[in-house]
Image 1 (tube, helix red, strand yellow):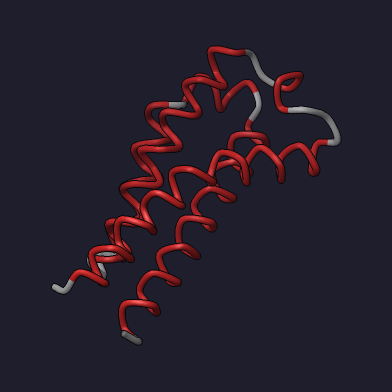
Image 2 (cartoon, rainbow, N blue to C red):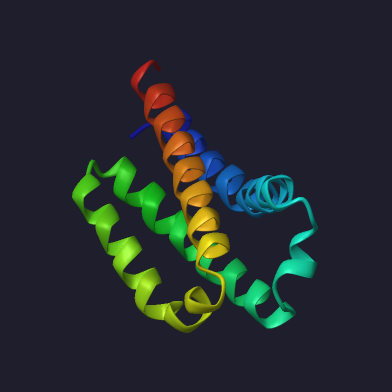
Length: 118
């Protein structure tokens, strides 16, 4: 593994972790028509932030390892962890998960393409 590949990998993880929350909050605010802070409480938002970052790390790592079937583990684990929150506002949490997963997969594909073409 050369230095450029390492730089792409590290940069990809940093971009994903630094921007995923912004993207998810922006899209959810546009969908719901109101700020996320009005939709859920601070505790749920903070928990969602931590779980979302863990989700990002797992999805990107599975993508880079070509372990696509392992992505199902992310959904299963998140469902178990957020079961109580999801029962209160299913659509909101499901949409947030889908946006975050889609964004993580897109970043993963871009990283894989960049690595492939160097």
